[in-house]
Image (cartoon, rainbow, N blue to C red; front, side, top):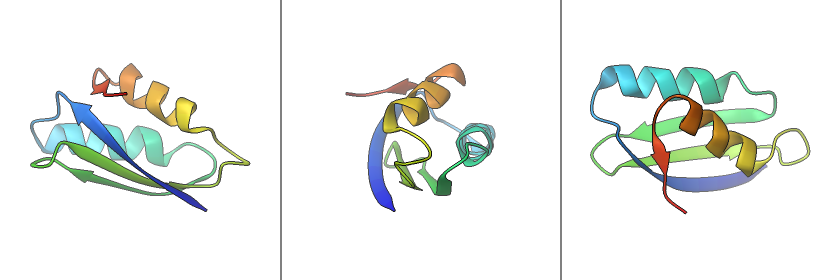
Length: 69
Protein backbone atom coordinates (compact mmCIF):
# COMPACT_ATOMS: atom_id res chain seq x y z
CA UNK A 1 0.00 0.00 0.00
CA UNK A 2 1.12 3.51 -0.81
CA UNK A 3 -0.03 6.72 0.83
CA UNK A 4 -0.37 10.13 -0.77
CA UNK A 5 -1.47 13.51 0.54
CA UNK A 6 -2.84 15.70 -2.24
CA UNK A 7 -3.46 19.43 -1.97
CA UNK A 8 -6.88 20.09 -3.48
CA UNK A 9 -8.51 23.47 -4.13
CA UNK A 10 -12.21 24.15 -4.39
CA UNK A 11 -13.46 21.98 -1.52
CA UNK A 12 -15.77 23.91 0.79
CA UNK A 13 -18.54 21.75 2.22
CA UNK A 14 -19.76 18.29 3.16
CA UNK A 15 -20.99 17.75 -0.41
CA UNK A 16 -17.39 18.18 -1.59
CA UNK A 17 -16.22 15.59 0.93
CA UNK A 18 -18.85 13.07 -0.19
CA UNK A 19 -18.15 13.69 -3.89
CA UNK A 20 -14.41 13.06 -3.52
CA UNK A 21 -14.63 10.22 -1.01
CA UNK A 22 -17.29 8.50 -3.12
CA UNK A 23 -15.63 8.83 -6.52
CA UNK A 24 -12.07 8.09 -5.39
CA UNK A 25 -13.23 5.40 -2.96
CA UNK A 26 -14.97 3.59 -5.83
CA UNK A 27 -11.70 3.16 -7.74
CA UNK A 28 -10.31 -0.39 -7.69
CA UNK A 29 -7.21 -0.46 -5.51
CA UNK A 30 -8.12 2.50 -3.29
CA UNK A 31 -8.17 1.35 0.32
CA UNK A 32 -8.93 4.62 2.13
CA UNK A 33 -9.79 8.24 1.33
CA UNK A 34 -9.84 10.98 3.93
CA UNK A 35 -10.76 14.58 3.07
CA UNK A 36 -9.54 17.43 5.28
CA UNK A 37 -11.66 20.45 4.32
CA UNK A 38 -9.85 22.96 6.54
CA UNK A 39 -6.43 21.81 5.40
CA UNK A 40 -7.46 21.53 1.75
CA UNK A 41 -6.00 18.04 1.59
CA UNK A 42 -7.06 14.59 0.46
CA UNK A 43 -5.19 11.64 1.98
CA UNK A 44 -5.34 8.44 -0.06
CA UNK A 45 -4.12 4.94 0.72
CA UNK A 46 -3.95 2.82 -2.43
CA UNK A 47 -2.40 -0.17 -4.16
CA UNK A 48 -0.19 1.17 -7.00
CA UNK A 49 -0.48 -2.17 -8.83
CA UNK A 50 -4.24 -1.61 -9.16
CA UNK A 51 -4.57 2.15 -9.58
CA UNK A 52 -2.14 4.96 -10.40
CA UNK A 53 -1.82 8.22 -8.51
CA UNK A 54 -2.52 9.99 -11.81
CA UNK A 55 -5.86 8.17 -12.08
CA UNK A 56 -6.74 9.27 -8.53
CA UNK A 57 -5.85 12.89 -9.39
CA UNK A 58 -7.85 12.67 -12.62
CA UNK A 59 -10.88 11.37 -10.71
CA UNK A 60 -10.71 14.31 -8.27
CA UNK A 61 -10.32 16.70 -11.20
CA UNK A 62 -13.36 15.12 -12.91
CA UNK A 63 -15.42 16.03 -9.82
CA UNK A 64 -14.57 19.70 -10.42
CA UNK A 65 -11.70 20.21 -7.98
CA UNK A 66 -8.14 21.30 -8.69
CA UNK A 67 -5.30 19.05 -7.55
CA UNK A 68 -2.10 21.06 -7.00
CA UNK A 69 1.03 19.57 -8.49
